[in-house]
Image (tube, rainbow, N blue to C red):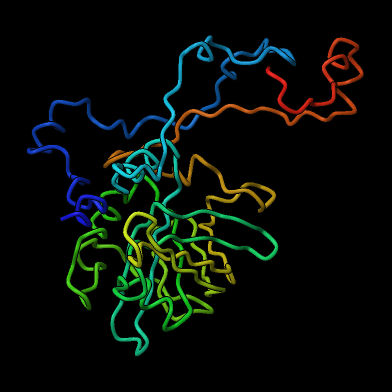
Length: 293
């Protein structure tokens, strides 16, 4: 019982609505006509040293100890997935060692961490003692495909989070189409605007600090070895992917997702240029340890 309380898996409540379809029907319909467009920054007349656009700094904060003895680990999970947001979604295709069983699964612990070489990180829940199909396949074959999820197939991608029995493929439930990869054995998702063939670089297993010896997760670093970009998604330079074509979907807390339709641009400041202004140059002071802002 003590381990169950500290672990807290039963508290997650992944589907918070007793009747989701009823709740969904009460909401405005999804706008398929909303176009990606640019707007001004929140405060175009912001000047160096001006700080935040609101007085939010006056609102008190609550200090939370992630390792408090009475705090279940799942409370950290719920806090982190709602606070580290928006998060890109890794849509990972793998095959088993014999090349007979395919797997397709979304991951909200996913990100780009380097470009030379192209490196990506994936986080798997659970340990090597009870690996999920994606992790088992990745470790066995050292290959996978990372697909970026767009609005066009978010429902299909979400269905791949189905708790299907081991050996049962999610591809059929999603209705998505496999496309042959060039370097690795797993297929890429044909509907994906951007896909990355990748090979395993290394893994690291994590152990719970609340429940001794309990393996709670595995981090996998994979290297991109081939990129696939839909022709209409590349800009005229062939270097950037157009957001209006990619239309990426991000993960928020709980079962919430977000979309990208509104963009703004902020040029990166260059020290040599901004300090030509005498008033701005006065802001260039050495940091004093312990100094209160």
